[in-house]
Image 1: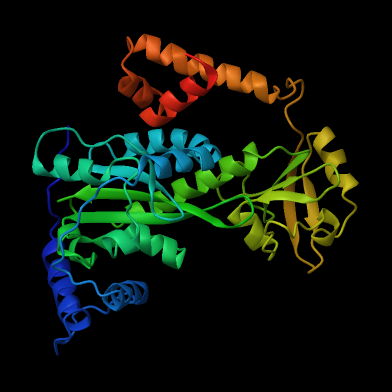
Image 2: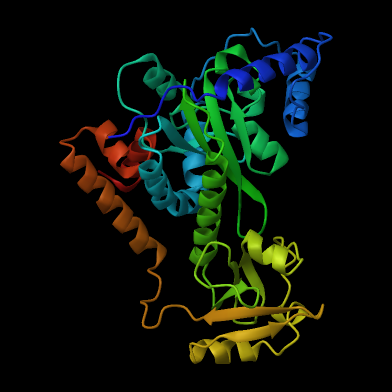
Length: 369
C-alpha cells in the first residue's frame, strides 16, 4: 500500500507564509507578506480579535449539554438521513489520508462523524477530541476553522495549520463546504479534517461535491408531485451539477437545490414559493405530459434562455406513506432490536444506530421498554 508523507515539499514555504501573515495581521508587526491573506481568512481573524480572543488561549472540546444534543438530533433527522450515505463514501475516499469527515448544523454543533483514524498516537487522540457528536466547533468556540469560515462566508474553504486562529488548533488542516436546505437556507456544513497531516487543498473540491450530493438527496426526499432535473442544453444528465426542482400538484415549487436556484436566477426561499408558470414560459401541464412519456423537454425561460428538463413522477406503485403511529412503532422496534443485538449495551446500540444514548433511553422510555 502506498503511504503518504506527513508533510509535502510545499508545506515549509506555506507555513512560513502563514507565520508572516499571522505576525502582521494578528500580532500587528510590520512585516512584508510573502503571500496575500485570503480576505475571508482575514475577516475571521479580525472577528476573533474583536471578540477579545488571543491565540495563546487554551481550548477545550467538550460536548454541549445533553438536552442540546437531543434537540439537535430531533431537528436534523432529514439532514442526517441524507448525509450518512455520503459520509460513508467520503470515509472510503479519504481512508488513507488520516483525514476524517464531520457534519455540523448551522450553529457549528457536530451532529455526525465519519470514520475516525485508528491508532493510539497523538493525531488519533486529537481527532477524537473534535470527532464527537455534540462538540461545539463554531467560530465563537474554537476561532477560525473551516467550519466557522464556511458557515460565515457560505462558500467552500481550505485552511492549513496556523491559518487557524488559536495555537491549539494549529495542528489541524481542514476543508469545509456549507450545506443549503431545499428552501435555500444554510442548514449546516461538511468538514474534512486532518491532524498533523499533509496539506490537501484538493479536499475543498471533494467537500463541495459531497455537500452538493447531500443537498440533492434532501430535495429528492421532499414529498412532491413532480421532480424536474434541469441542465443547460448539451449537458449530460444524471450528475450532481444538475438543477433539481420539486413541484407540488399545483405546480408550486416545494424545494430546489443550489444549481436550480442559480439556473433560474431565483432565490426560491421558504414562504415565497413561486409557481412553475412564473419560471418557465410554457404551461406547467406540459411538464407532467413529458414525465408520463419518460421524455426530455426543452424548457424556455421568460428571459429567453432555454433549459433541458427531465421531468420525473414519484415512483410508480410506491406504497402510501405509513401513518405516524406506524412509523414510531417501526422506529421503536429497530431500537429494541439494536439493544438486544448489543446484549443490553445501550452505548453500543446507539453507535450502531448513529444516535445518542440519550435518544435511545428517551425513545424507549416514552414508548415503554
